[in-house]
Length: 235
Image (cartoon, rainbow, N blue to C red; front, side, top):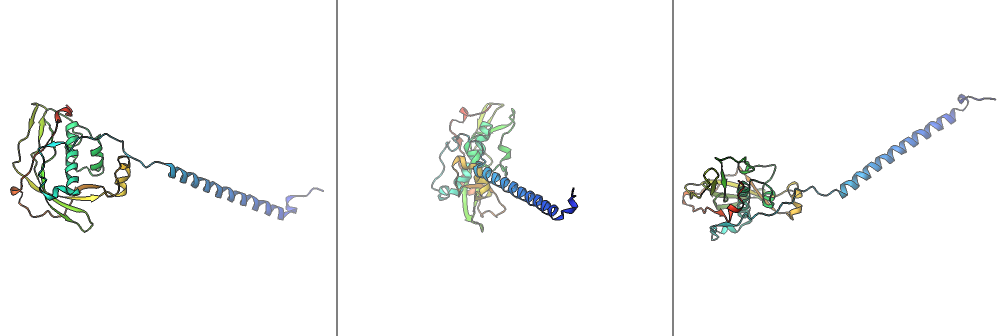
């Protein structure tokens, strides 16, 4: 005698439950597999880095600085010196592609945009030395950063392409500027791993902190020129 499915309701229920259980197990396995693959990909993905550029002789300059000033020996002032030098060197060679620029210039905080990758023209001078300054005060902020006051001059050494003349006008005037020299965070350090930059490395940035009360007219400032700058000039 032929029987219909209506004669076996229990078999129908069990069959339906089996299908549901198998489908749930399939979804669970698929989810675990996806998460496992993502974990493996994350584990083996290299830390993103910037291109590894060669070093530039940015601190090879003359005349010598006044190292009798004790502030010159601090990491905070050295950071400002190297940052100014990196910005000026990028003007000289018309490029950002050197080690010191990558380390000291934060790509998300272009405080030196007026000196970086300038479109050359006959009337625009090229920096042939770092911006001249003398450190006059360092104090610590509430966050542990170093607040550095400097007397700085806009009268840096320049080369004029239109006249093919190097100008070192001397220091006619200077003004107070204040910077915060801070430890790089993980986001800044990660791309620099190829350069061996480790935790505790420093960068500088402008700050709203008040400068020390100093009369810059009484502060001597040395104007430096990169050694052999003409060998590196991008025309």
